[in-house]
Image (cartoon, rainbow, N blue to C red; front, side, top):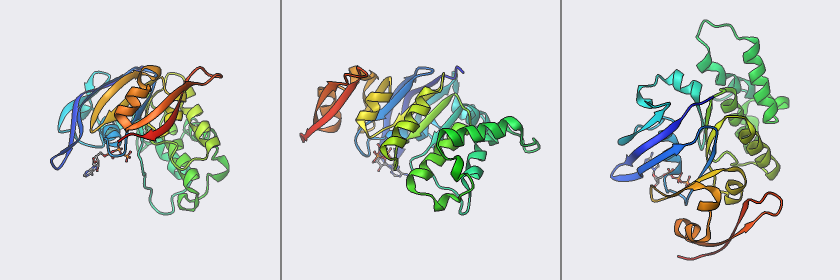
Length: 259
Ligand SMILES: Nc1ncnc2c1ncn2[C@@H]1O[C@H](COP(=O)(O)OP(=O)(O)OP(=O)(O)O)[C@@H](O)[C@H]1O
């Protein structure tokens, strides 16, 4: 487990507008990074560019030192899994069908479904609390159950890198903690996740990338980035930053908008 991910001077434009505007990023192997910033600042676009879902206008993404445009899609999918913001599945697909697809990059069309594949899928279902719902069609699930099924799919891919766009979307507080405990406790896994909840970012991430207007305003260890002046600059919100007496980690208290 030692896949390295790096972006150099990335630019992604939609029409004339640069949604990602010269972003450089080095993601330390085995670290957990939260990408934060206001609506429309380019977080999802950055994640999609990192996962090669979006072509870049300039700059490059390097995976283990190789430009990802040269990495074949299946090889890429064995190393990097993406949870997009609003994933879509064909009608009628069941939870287990979806999670089983996580094994596709690891299997050739003529390979038999193996015991290890089966165990990996069951493990992903268990870790996301979905074992009981495995045979349910996705469209019959609640929003939070469906979100967990997509996370199970990403886990079943058994990649070194997980890119998660708002993984806690639709989740109740217990499942938010469950999912983030799971993805941040898998040893050696490199996680980059977009989070709107600064409390969760402060609690789970080791590093924070703060974006505004397509650019990285600050990037580094949580306590260095989640500071009142920086939060004001990025979000136009005055915040208090306290220390959780139990964990010693920062707790962000939003106080007022200062536009
Ligand atoms: N396919 C697209 N076509 C045109 N503009 C787009 C497209 N996708 C994103 N944009 C624009 O690019 C900018 C960045 O969008 P992006 O979704 O990356 O923001 P975000 O930071 O993830 O926002 P949010 O917090 O609201 O999810 C926005 O101005 C958005 O309107």
